[in-house]
Length: 83
Image (cartoon, rainbow, N blue to C red; front, side):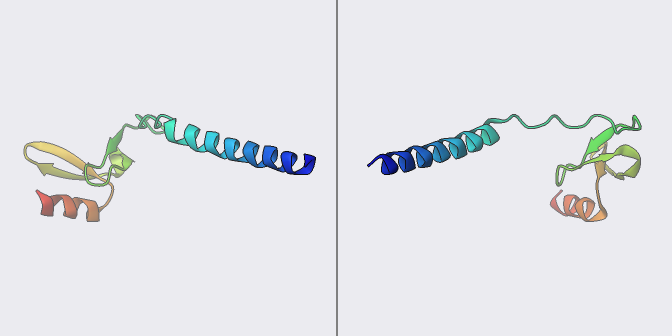
């Protein structure tokens, strides 16, 4: 009887711990996007996939009167096909 109670307490504790870990992971606010690299270079967000890349490494595209920055030519091409 006492062993069964101990086992239920252990199982309950494990379930509670797992639940708390999952809850904390889901409620954790997302990290803010990087503004600059460690070298102080500005980061820009790819409008197609959402990846942040240093401005100097980004692939540039003039579109609708604005400059868009992409992480790869594949993302740039997808964006152009959608527009």
